[in-house]
Each structure stands twice: as structure tokens, then as C-alpha cells.
Length: 285
Image (cartoon, rainbow, N blue to C red; front, side, top):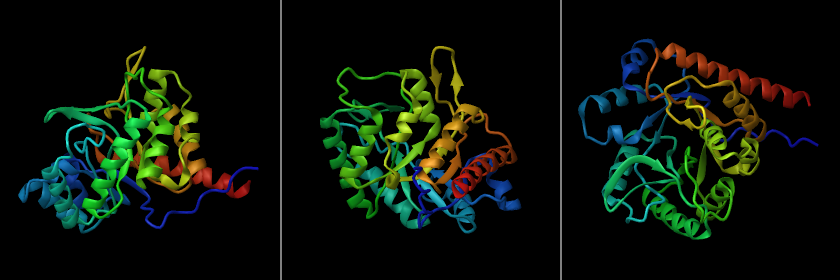
């Protein structure tokens, strides 16, 4: 028997977009039918200035979530306390629905590689990351979301699948997950696993948000670039995620080759249509 569709989470936001500079004025002038926006946290750490000015005005009309790229939760350097203070100050100022970052490391010895580096899937890494997540959550006074990253290499030391690694960290640290559907597809292509296995291995009660994005297929491998529309296999995988996880706040990410906001809203409408179709099928089943 098919499992029932999970109910809407109390803090379900609907369908959102990543807030990007080229769209600031258009959003303020037209108030597009977008349910919420996700901001890149580090872009708004500087007190005052244009970015924060626009964010304050947009925040008055839309719910906002914060998404970071510099927490380095899997790193071996001590957690950056100055970064955490800026993160908390911004959260206090804009009152986001939630805060997320990536399950990765971003540098060593205070050198930022400006990339999201993969981790070995080991029990030792789980213990290390769980401790750091708990420190971050205690400091912020809230649970955080961790996102699965795209990867291009693996570690010989890994003892389990990525999805088992994610599940263990989420449960032991009592944090939530941001499930990036494109990243699942990219990594499955690069490493030869079945993307449905990833979906199947993630616990329903831990997924708080979904990312959808495009990538660049280089033939023998795929690079996660966020500069193309979402492709059909990723849409199919999104449908599978909706069947399992139910009503999850979903957004479109675009970080380069940013088109007019109407094009991104069309993609967002497609995501909404897929989810509504899946939910309708579940109701009839």
C-alpha cells in the first residue's frame, strides 16, 4: 500500500525564488506573485548600503529565508565566531523563516577556497559535524538546515552512502535538511548511483526545503552551475520527491545568466504544477 502524503508543515511557505540584484527594482515595482525569497546571507552582512536597503523593503512584503555558503560546518578549523555573530545579527534584523547552509567544508587554515568541498562519509565525520551543528544551533537559538552538495570526487575512506550520512547527521544533531534535487541528479550522474535511492534514503520528517536549479553537462560529467533552466530528469526527480515528502517549500535557484524574473516565475509555476498533479494523484489513489 502506498504511504499517505505527509501533511503540510506548519512553516510551509509555498514556492519561492532566490533574491538576485537584477530583480530588486522589478520586485518592488510590480510585487510579483512569488510566495517567498531566499537570500544569500553573506551578501547582506555589511551594515547599511544598497543591498540591505533593498532587502528591508522586499522583506516588508515577502517572507525571507537565509542561505549561506561560508559556515564550513564540515571543516577542521574552529567555527568562525565573527561569521556566526554576523549571521545572528542579520537573522535578528530580518527575522527569516529559517537559516540554511551546505554540508561541506570550504577551506583550511583560514583560507577560503570559495567552493563547496565534499566530505568523507564516515562515522568520525558524523561525530565531528554533529558537534559543530549543535554549537551553531545553540548560538543561533534555532535549528538550521543543511543542504546536500554536488560532488565530483569521492573518498576511499567513505563507509556509507551520502544519504545515510545525511540522515545520521540530521537525526543526531536534530537539524533539518535542504534537499537540492539538482545536486542529487548531478552527483548521481558523476558517481553512478540511482538518484531514487537518495530520495528513498532521506527521512520525511527532516526535509524543510527543496532547491531546483540547472547545470552544465560536459559529456562524461556534470557541473553544478546554476546558470541554465531545470532539465526534465530533474523535474522527474522533483516529482518523486514530492510523492515522498509531500508539501515542501520549493524554490528556483539561478546564480549566473540570470534571465528576466518572468522566466524564473514560469519555472516556478512548472514546479507548482508538478506538485499539484502529484498531490491530486495521491488523493485519488
